Length: 88
Image (spheres, one colour):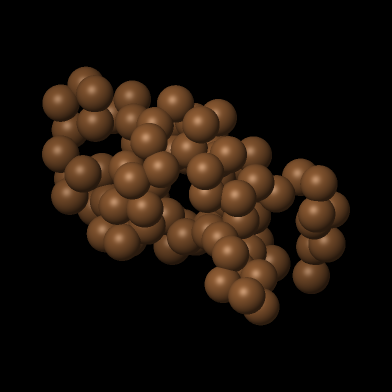
């Protein structure tokens, strides 16, 4: 089990800002299964590492290029089952 230092994890608002999308868009990506948070705290806060933020940027680039989110999700599911930024 990898231990990720707490300073390396970003709450949803900060992760969205770093990735260049709105908080609502990131919440939608989570809802439709494009990714999962790296960690969820006992109080329910969703946290994201840098690998997750890079994945969000990739989703945005693909979507901006004309790929529908459904197709992006299918590509990710075919490529690998790990939707989280880092394996726990």
